[in-house]
Image (cartoon, rainbow, N blue to C red):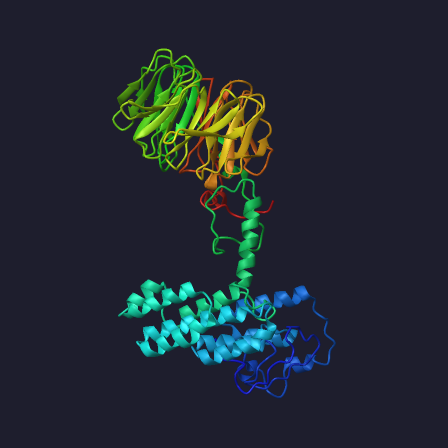
Length: 592
């Protein structure tokens, strides 16, 4: 960084920064330009004549405030790239100033570790601040850096003097002062840096200190711009475009290196899982349920044909191949739940089924076949996060908590369960019941509370990874999104045909930005979480689509199960050009 604003310079009388549009800038070599930065060799121009002096007689157009802001942003960015002479020329020709000269002096003194001068600069800057009390906070941060640098240099007495005579009298953040005093016990510089989480004396920590002073808005932007302001604005613009992109389904990257700033960001529908990649026909009757494992390597499908088929997902081609068939579910399989570590799979049947099956997926062996009574109805199940317990229930009033061997640990009487979900706290279970509601049940203290109340039967529901949102399939109404924390209905999604069949929807895509559901009109509907209208309607099934599952590890892969006896696997368009192929890992920008 160039030294500037220190050589016998008279302080600027105006507190505000304004472009001197139309004024001639005739600074000599080594003098400070109106941007507060020192030029070198008169910016490489002859000292007798310069383009600036030639144009000084011409009447310049007065710059608007936004033009001034843009020039300062560009200047700051160029300065960060080390193009200091270019910055000088830009400020000289425009008549703008990058920052107040007092701020420049302050910056240089901080970077050079001249703490007494930096403190003196604060008094000059005080009149330019929105809040004069900010001087105390800024002084505290300066003295903290000074104290730590003394400690690292082994100057214990000087550090102790800063702590006692300078930091403590500020009467600011006494808790932090107690922490700082503990650093006196660090015998080695490495111990100090580790304990204080500090980069050590030098450019890195001092730059970070300046960033903290600017980011905290102690200095108004008219005096000193926030650090890397242009990059911050560009990142916000890119994030906003991605946020508005209906088909954006890749990992969000806050950096600017992988995007083009020259065109708007738009993702192609061809990159979205809207196209049939595979039709699995191994089931010989209606397929009622399908679910990808948590690691995304397997898919389980359950059918009226009394079997569960485990499919292996090829990590490269994303094609599914039959791995195992689990047989013997006399009533058919209408619900499946993977254990948290994907070792086990529990299968439930329809309303008249009093049994559930707990399979070891790796060995294909049946570990437990559970039935408390032939009069039970065990149609839904959910795993406890510890993977050692599960809850199950049905519409005949059964609500059990069991271990892996099917032993009954707890039961809740009189709850007619339609669907279940275990909360991440390991204690609370969410259950939708025949009273058109979802309640939270605590098996430890035997308390329950109402969370969601609908006006029509809740046929099924699922919860987002964060535990904040719940997706409900409501009879005759369709798909509803609820905020479980605030207990409010967020959105009603349109398009789907939902009667009194049990249809299972899901969250999906990176960051679970999308929602997919089956429908009685034989389609799969996909919505962006923020939009009530579907962004895709997938056709191909010939009967009701009972369930949709989005692969949690491969956001471009989705499966749907239907009464037509098939499982369809959905993915991006099979034939993409080279640019679009690259977009499968990072959506590329293209014209709308």
